[in-house]
Length: 235
Image (cartoon, rainbow, N blue to C red; front, side, top):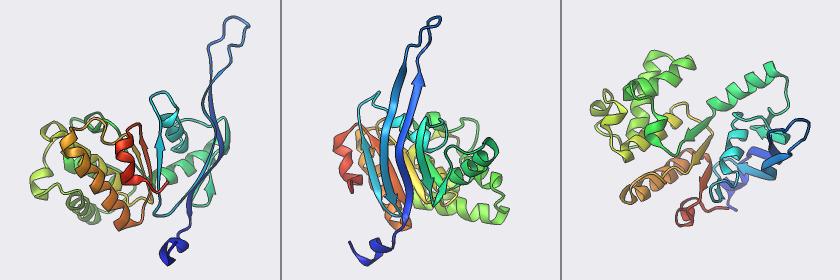
């Protein structure tokens, strides 16, 4: 471990996390639970990448949805940047989740489905900034900055385009740009290249890896494809 790594603090801590779903009851008969996530624990440091590998139905996506606050945990602790947000009162939990989501970027599996079809590239990137009350001038600076970073160039050509006007690889670059627009500390990528042509998969993975290193981001990379693990294979 070098000096820079030694200074990196724990970004996300998950302790004995369980997310169970109750099966449909038959009359008074309790049918039990589906244990989608059962006793998961890990720590993720700043700048570190964690790969979660598993087949469909193994609970990968439920784990991420629980960490992001989209699904309530049955048991366990989720601590992000030192703040615990599981098991809180509804009002406190809502505030914590709002802070969490402003610091976590999410890269979805299906780029076309993840992008609002009737919004331009500019509007897609502008919306989260406006919600978080970023000033107009800074909005413009950040939009151009992230488009340059994900290599959607020339920027002026892409700003007025709609998602259907982009290729699959360009759509995923836009999804990554949106994930980065609030300057997060953590990126969660759920099968980010599984729906892309083989010819662009490596480009997207290399881009994500470069962004991670440039910004010292924590990354949770979810996949079923072992051939892509080496891009985010710290553990």
